[in-house]
Image 1: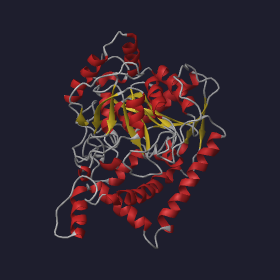
Image 2: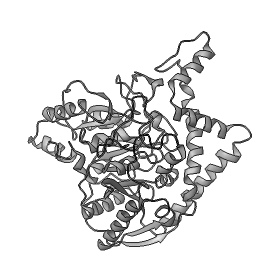
Image 3: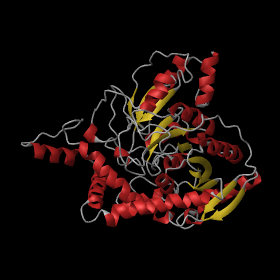
Image 4: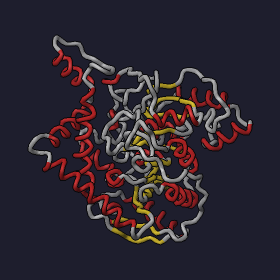
Length: 468
């Protein structure tokens, strides 16, 4: 069973070649015994399964940041300890109620999606299945580790500045961040509302298309949701004939580790052999993306997290007065990284500094989006390494926030521009997985999936080495 992709399992269940209950129970037992601290909650029994639906019996793991009715949804934070929402996120309902997928478990994450390593969780760090002394990336590291470690056939996470693509690269699997608004954010516990986007973790590109097709759509509960202009197709391409790839000099040279760059350049040669043209291009404002992101995202988080005061949700610290209760609850409930970003964001939004920091960061964001628009006048896709290095050792960057933030150097510009991007496995460096990122114009998901599938076949990298 472990060798089956999610699509293969779904097909086998529909044809009667695989028993849905038996398949789900197989993964439920593996998830319960997970050695990577990937899960914060696992289903304690195998539910009844409606085999008439397309994903019937296929287990799915969901990042703890998605609200799930009656099931703990804690966003990796003590301040939401044992919080059980009275409703489920729209994207979760689409996967379970509509498509018939079965909730296997909730996955560990950086607290409120703030981090690049999944070390900032109140429930302990998640380990990389390829090397348990290293991080799986973040913030959706739990969702990446369950697929890489084969304790779930697929999973969903969220990407604010790279939190799907970076952990996918560091664990050797496929991670997709769709166009901002393609999937409803209703029921996602908010970090930075203008950046947060749900997405997918899978073993291959075909599973990505299948999972994405069930999640997209406009939602009356989220007025920023748009869906996609056409249904998601299962990709079939094996060629890149006529495709023009742009390689931005600013995101594919300085700061990228030698082994990562070597694998990236080898894949560019493969792309040429498949018919693509590859040329150097420029995104002149991309190097300012990290600075802009770390003003905009903390500013939005300082506003979104104001609601956690001990009155409405989860954890409360008892005190003699209401103000003391607020203060002590937030002091004890939030971790260090969350407090750091709340203070950064509050300062950036404060009177006298708004125009100098937040306002200027938004102007840089507009310039980055314009850079991509100009690039897509010449190229079909922009390609880069997904992360500048391989998975780093646990605790090696926790005392240096800037070094940690640099892990999102190649992914943040696409998030600021709101465009789709996918990371596919691109072989190994130092014995650890690296990723190849493909970004396209807004709503170009079908074309990105075609290009990703053609490259996936050509690269021929089997990311299943970590399967136990």
